[in-house]
Figure (spheres, rainbow, N blue to C red):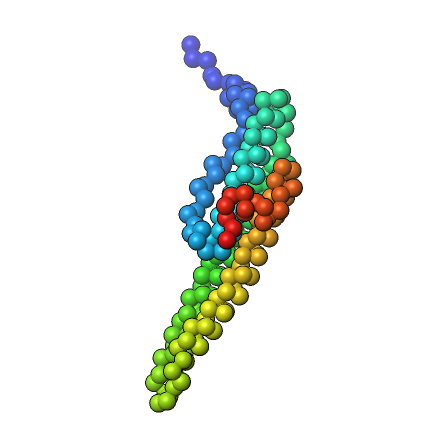
Length: 176
């Protein structure tokens, strides 16, 4: 005689297992030879540290018998996801802006070469200096914005909250 399976056994099994959070995607490879690359690497290291701490705390609470879902953990998870989204938006925007500046400079140099018969000898140097100046200003602003996101992430955990972003970057050898 076939006995129907009771849904209660699968329910009790699911309640006895810790909740499964989505697996953390690998951090993107970053070129740490640039200020933006170092800031991004520092952000992702902060993200990993806070996420690891939260996962450990969640598992410890589960083993300790606190089986209620952690609202705080969910809020941290959402804050981390928001931070990643913001940092990646900054990276894309800066990359696009730097490409636009380079393209504009190239068009300007070409137009000047075509239109003017007697250009100063240092016109190319002046254009390159202007591009460098604008690029540095944009990169500095991007680094500040990324470091602000790093600060928000570090503040999500009581251990990392006490660390300044500069100290965090220095402790991971991500400073100039």
